[in-house]
Image 1 (cartoon, rainbow, N blue to C red):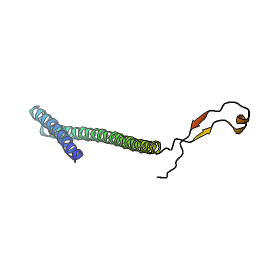
Image 2: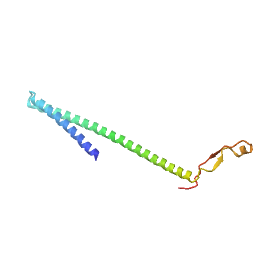
Image 3: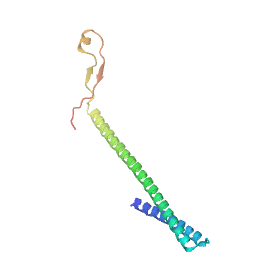
Image 4: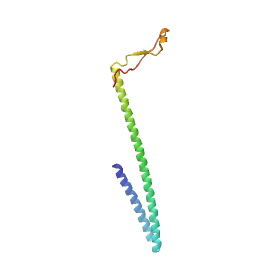
Amino acid sequence: MGNNIKSKKGNMVIKAAMFGSLAGVITGLLLAPKSGLELRQDLAVQAHEIGDKAVEIRNKAQSALQNVEEKTQITVNTGKSLIQKGKQLVSNLKILVYEIQHGALTKTVSIYASDNKDSGEPTNDIPIIENEHEY
């Protein structure tokens, strides 16, 4: 809905510029001392030039609008992706907190192979997260 209003305002500006230019050209030509045939030819040439400029301005405006729309869509998609990643992180954090509260981090395992135990060297036990519950 907002794009439609902006589009209408843009069209009004283009039309106003075109009609203002046309009025200035016509006034200038009418005040110039020329014959009727020369005046009509000059008016036709000027009208075509103004029409070409109006089309060029419209094409540039449409291109700029399309560029803004594409960049806006990319920004929206990036934002949605970041929100989804944030939701996933929160979900993972909730699971981790639940597992910590319910003692899921109490089991340990040696980081060395079983032959190191026989060698008399000290072992380093580290905690491992094991999912005891399926969600």
